[in-house]
Image 1 (tube, one colour):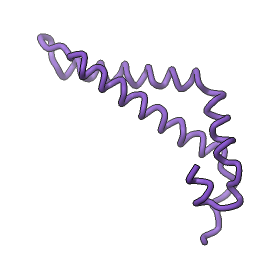
Image 2 (image 1 turned 90 degrees about the vertical axis):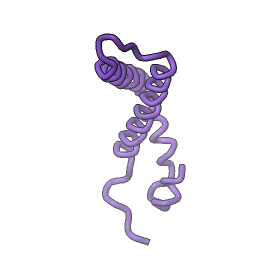
Image 3 (image 1 turned 120 degrees about the vertical axis):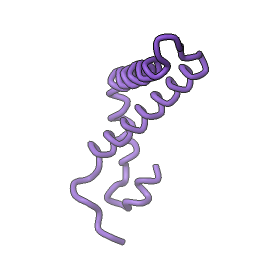
Image 4 (image 1 turned 30 degrees about the vertical axis):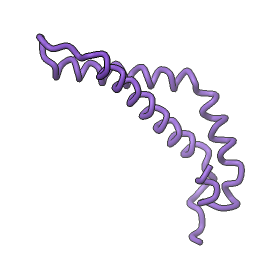
Length: 91
C-alpha cells in the first residue's frame, strides 16, 4: 500500500491491518453498497419523473458507482482505524 511508503517505518504493516479490518466488515460493506445504490436509484427515478423510467445502462452505472464509493469509504475508515497514533513526523 502506498500509504505505508508515504508514512514511513511507523506505518509498517498498515496495509495488512487495514485489509484485515475491511475483511472483518464485509457485511457492512455490502450493506453500504446496497444503501448507496438504493438511494442513487431513487434519486434517478425522481429526476426521471412519473413518465420516465431509468434505463438498464443507467442503473448499471449507478450500481458501479455505489460499489466504488462504498469501497473508498471503507478504505478511508480502515485507514483511520488502523493508523498509528498521532500524525507522522514530517520528512
